[in-house]
Length: 133
Image 1 (cartoon, rainbow, N blue to C red):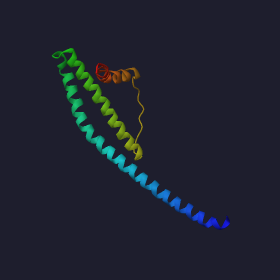
Image 2: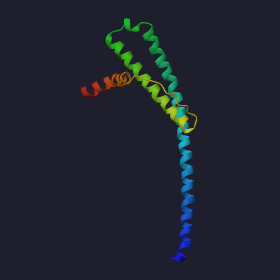
Image 3: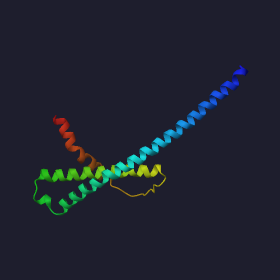
Image 4: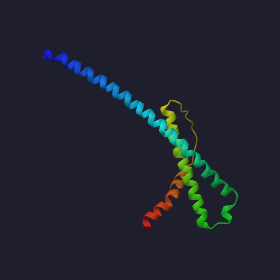
């Protein structure tokens, strides 16, 4: 058994070197993925700003006064969905910053009831469509 020790040590050493190499490769892949995700989110956020800006313009300029209740509800649903998408994109960007060690946390209050209502409202048509089909 003692004559096998040098061979086992050599095998163990090679395995450790291989593990270190694979770990470095994994870390490099994760950095590339986070860079890609950050780039993608920036590209998605730009058109989302256009959507949310136009919805705000429609709401601020009384488009609801000349549209039906269904159209008003559709505009509100689009607005809520765009806001949720924008928050998701910003969350991914925050994760990218966190991974890069550049995230500054900020604490702020929010209305849980309002948040849950927005989630339910934004998915209401999808739920109705699925139950109808």
